[in-house]
Amino acid sequence: MVFHVTLTQAEDGWMVAECPALPGCVSQGKDEQEALTNIKEAIAAWLWAEDQKAAAQSRRPNQPEILVSV
Image (cartoon, rainbow, N blue to C red):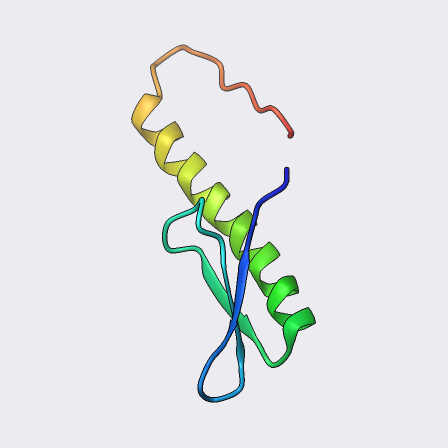
């Protein structure tokens, strides 16, 4: 999957990375490369958390769970 991210420099010099498509998905790093590495982890965690919420709401008894890797 591909996501657009924004990078801005904070007043303290840290780089802030945000993924606008995923509300609240923000990370930071000491430099651009670290911020990009950290936002990738934040995106994966955001998607996992949303999947867990959706799965919990849609579980039905005696229905097998099917996992699909993207």
